[in-house]
Length: 212
Picture 1 (tube, rainbow, N blue to C red):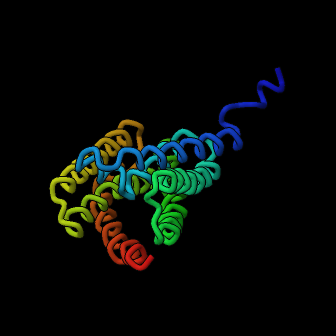
Picture 2 (cartoon, rainbow, N blue to C red):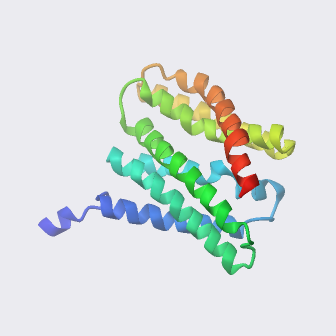
């Protein structure tokens, strides 16, 4: 019984392996789903679609440090899955390495943050739960702002902004039902965070990809 007890599914090794495998599959799938519909094309070629899953992983992992590390690992694995599929599909051009490097750095920044946010919303105590909920929703809202204000894809932007607003609402309701203090901060901070995310994507990420 002791070996079976020790080999729990939430041990660090199992958690890290599971997130890495999921990241590889996520990257491969997003490449394969490109171009099917306009909304799906944007959804599979966006920052939020990749890093939002790290919040889900973080919420499922019991240990905070492992949740943070899993976020970083998942994003690296997602980049590997996507660009491996791109190379096999013959679309990995001369600028592919530079773009992959930019997305990897972005993932290493956002992945741990979203892993922490998912863990905090579900397992932490205090006001940080509401802040973490806003962090999760701001990613989708910021992506919607970028699609509308930056790329002028207003139809896709409306979808992302609607999903982001719904996500912020659901997270706020969840926090309220679980007794989180100042749960309303989630709904208040999410739009502000979305604006910050949009400005960061416009000023930093887009500039780097444009020069990669």
